[in-house]
Image (tube, rainbow, N blue to C red; front, side, top):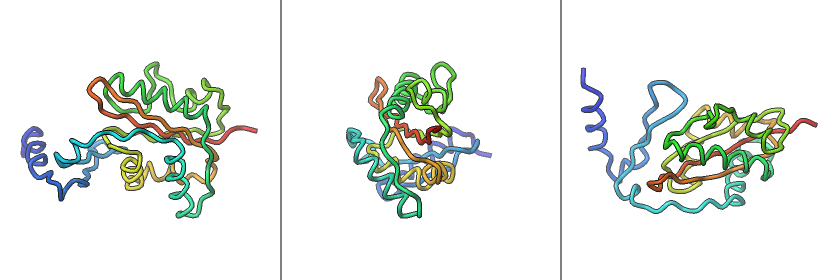
Length: 175
């Protein structure tokens, strides 16, 4: 059996521009690893435009028979807190720096959530690239297409080396 370091080196060697979108599932589920070309890696990170992100989410939802959602500043505040936490530790995850979960962070931001879920990503150079990744992942796709979701918040923060950490919070508020 090949050692993990040899396998990683072999996989990196085949990451050419033609294989820029090649994605491997994580061994532990719930995530994926995408090998990118040096050309893609050298591209600058595009600033996040929340309105354009909303339009992309709504286009995907509409294409899949779901109602559009609205951009909620409170959920964007919760998303920003999570993006900053991830950037601060240089690792994606759904636990906040204090161990909080998405629903708790939404509540702290003043959103009384009936449901709150989140999609996170790291390394993509634009929100459009992030959406492509999430659309290709069953768990992320499920969150994007939850019929009861009425609002989203979105954010991106960079770590000290400039790597972007993206967060999308999807929710529905209690009456």
